[in-house]
Length: 516
Image (cartoon, rainbow, N blue to C red; front, top):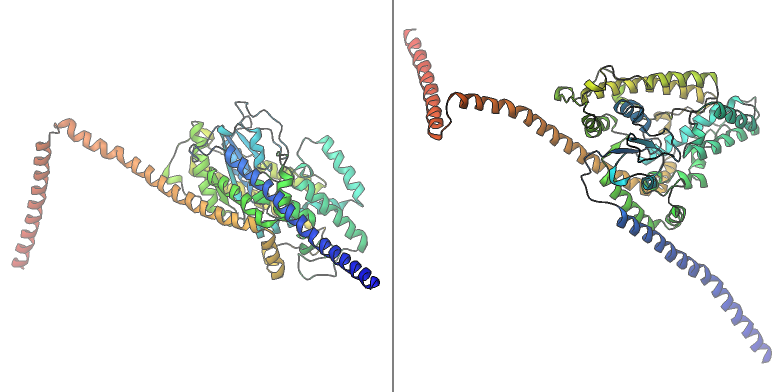
């Protein structure tokens, strides 16, 4: 009996232990969720309470902050629009990583950076307008992968990773140019991919160039990290996925907000908390001066020229608005179909080809509008933009081909993207659910911007016609006092005269028919 009681007690104790062990993770998980919910809600509440929602969002303020989301075509806007609208003196110090300058300087009117929205804490927010461009999240992930491989491949001219790092430090010491390796997010993504490329080359043998594994350009496993592995790596989860949402909310790993990591970690761990972050991102897009779409390249450029360019010219006293020039030039057949895979300039210069292409690109970038800023109209701005992107497109395409020759089989193209398995595409969509929803919201804003522009242009046309009409009335009244009864008599006289003329013409026709 005692033995049975002893065994029964042990069994009960073991059962309680098992139950407690099973309940501990649940309790811990519930506690972590509650903590994270408090962290995310607290952050969202503080943002909502601190941001100014007043003011006219359509009016350009003293300082323009171009929040450049990587791989959206922002560098094209910088070189082909903003460099023509702002002088070098008006541009804040050129750096894409942790800008250090005095934003209160009166001549500083333009900031273009990969820094996230938390950078606004360093700017006079009440005097700053923000613009950005969004891209379909799936295409942006593809482009991020392709650019990581492209830049990392430039280092394969070196025998090993140590040699590549030594050369990098020498170039940076001699050159004042901003290296891709110093720019977020490439300062994380390129070294990661660079190390992977060297590791795979060592594994297959340095003399072996051709790949034996060729399912598609995004799965050349013995040459480069496959796309499906890339998107599942912790680095991609930290930096790439939902990157647009985290950048617009100021929650990247490059944030000026000290609590960004905790909020971002909680949202990744508990995805249903993401709607708090998404709401902040949508609200900020709503208040931006301009939101462009990479996919709708031509219309986005036209809207930027009218909504931002026209105001910059107007504020500088250089605007000479000509409605006839408002439509974009169509002389360049390639410009309107530009593949918006824009190149990050000021790259790491690690070969003769790189130096030559960089010089060619810089030459194209520094070409100013032939008419001069003083005579620049919105239409002429668009013409200059079309010519500029044509040059950039050619330079970027050549440089990309040269870089990817070092990675046999990685022939990236729109056609090659179609060969990627559907399961990988679905996973990209799932991993970027916040960005997918934010992109849909951006498309609605873009439609609203288009309607507003049409309304503004209609108003301008009406205003152009009004002075002529007013001048005609004033001319009549200046020669004849415009009392009401005289206006009525004048109207009756004109009507009777017209009626008599018509009657005379009709009678003449009838007489002519009778004679015949």
